[in-house]
Length: 204
Image (cartoon, rainbow, N blue to C red; front, side):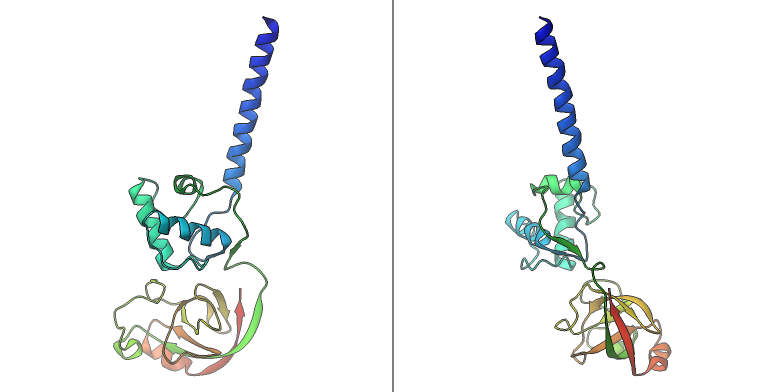
């Protein structure tokens, strides 16, 4: 009888340890959110598409389409609606907790480029024919929104522009090709004052 009790006690203790380890492992998984990149995002995008929450091609870049798909999924499952795939959303999606190669856009080795920059503002002239619309990635136009050539700088990349400050590659433009950036300013006067400058741009 004593032996049976001991076995039961050991089983309870072991179950508790395994549960604690499982919860810690899940909590340690990095959240997937706007700007995340890598195989974990590919897995997320495929899962969303398969479950009917279309987010476009599984390209491994967590942008506007993936964000909107996550929001819709969270609403449908009555989860916290924040666009972030944390432990609860991951579990609801049926994603594995062993997430493969994950990187965050704003992390990693920095590199600096010399780039030609211009300025734009929210006026109809600067935004023709897209006046009144948000940036390419869906962000409201505000200081820090930078138009890039996505073949040179991937959308969603964090940047630091000499003389301007921090920003995100969240917009595109027909004239923005190659080593060119178009920086958002609050007023047309500020954009004109900036003019055309060749500056150092750090990719974060």
